[in-house]
Length: 144
Image 1 (cartoon, rainbow, N blue to C red):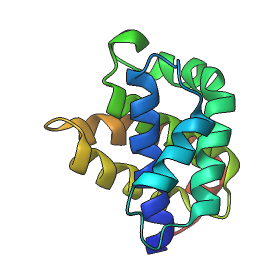
Image 2 (cartoon, one colour):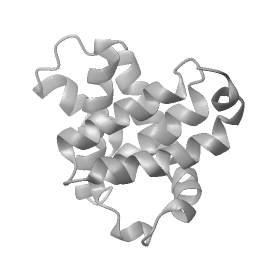
Image 3 (cartoon, rainbow, N blue to C red):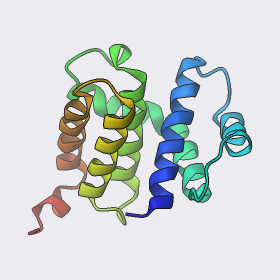
């Protein structure tokens, strides 16, 4: 796992969280600029950070439709941190075949443990595992 890419995921999570709290009033592009200008992001993979924000921002409605049936509550009741992590995981499972599904889920779990509520990582793990069964069935069938 690339440390710079992990930092990009963390930054994207924080930016998506901020964007949700602002009610989507700020553009993700302005939040991205703010993050890059104001935060000490160190050796972040800035290109991947940009990709995550751009693609999740563009496709979040599709991801909501995909994850909603997997939830045990209405989408609107999903914690914003968990929601953002599920968007990021959905994007990586769907579009980034270069990242093994186990890595996608492990990274999501770490973010959830760090920023989510107690035991939220179990919930996120269950949702992303079910999503991986759908999106990465061939990869999941390979011997480990």
